[in-house]
Length: 147
Image (tube, rainbow, N blue to C red):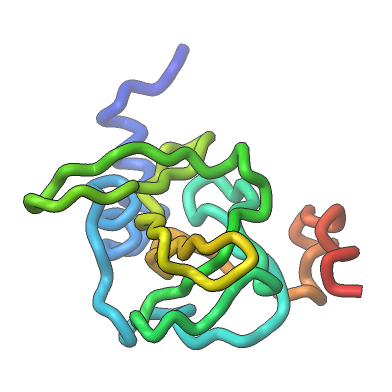
């Protein structure tokens, strides 16, 4: 029998920090320049903190000056869902993870080449898997990105 939404929410509240829950489940935003990965320069991939689905690679990460991790493209396009967001009187494009529906952040058309896009992502929605842990964590298919 499938868990009720309340049971799932309680399970996530037990698994995630308060900030991770607020960001991923309530479309929250963490503070710029005061988050885990905004200045992370290590090689590896970033996965959804809730589902573990692969989202972004350090090879596509850049310093946007915004204080949040920024990427030029998703690691696997199908794992990132985009839709219009009109909250707070603004028109933006929200990005969510496909499997878990976690709020990740927003995508903007002001990034560097070759894509011209900037995926501005909350660290609280991500888990970083360093290159030397990819195999141990079940992501060996991505090791070749770093050869």
